[in-house]
Length: 77
Image 1 (tube, helix red, strand yellow):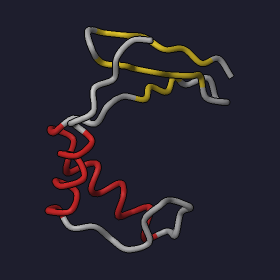
Image 2 (image 1 turned 90 degrees about the horizontal axis):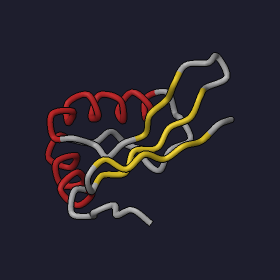
Image 3 (image 1 turned 120 degrees about the vertical axis):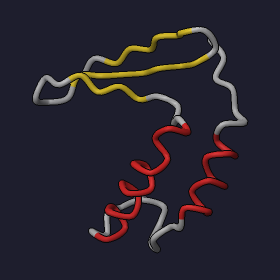
Image 4 (image 1 turned 45 degrees about the horizontal axis):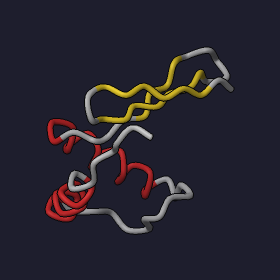
């Protein structure tokens, strides 16, 4: 698995190639993606995926979580 990190301004984007050769990019969540993120988390809870959550989250809880995440700044090392 090839892992790379790209710094764009003050944001840290990391990625790797999946087993099926698709490029996977990990990035800081964006406010525009809140509804999709909420849907993803709740679908993972429904299928009992091995994640930190075991109960579905409300939009208010997800807003609170995202606001805490957005306080962190990823700086180049």
